Length: 160
Image 1 (cartoon, rainbow, N blue to C red):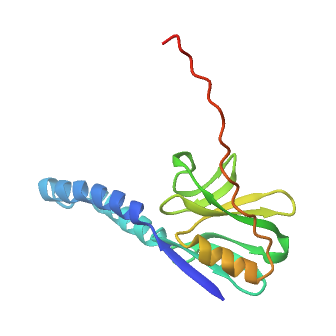
Image 2 (image 1 turned 90 degrees about the horizontal axis):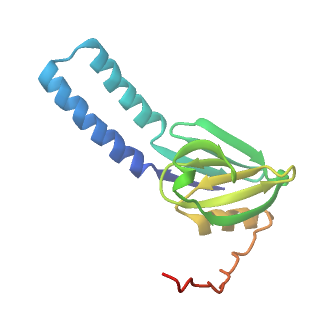
């Protein structure tokens, strides 16, 4: 069984930055109710989304944030193809739907794209693409080879 957890480094930095302002406000204003509630929400978000765990067992691939919230589980028989991809800034972090299908990521741009029989696409962020692809290949999931970048001739405008 394959299991890997990617920690949400970016989320930790953002929460620490916001937490610095909360600590400053706490020091200047005192511990009032709304500030304590906001600080509690920051701690809760940090706990719930501190990482993304991906598991591959004999029958399914599953992933979930933090202690097991907002995840997904897919039978391996439903996966037509898996391939290594690179997300861009527009994919963001967290869980969202994009033109590339569902995206689940916590940090970085490396991901695995899963194509299901019904055409649904999932992009699962990971900092262990090779290990995850090897685990899927071991379970007889078709792995797409990376496409070579096409070299295109760019026509320059000499009127500049």
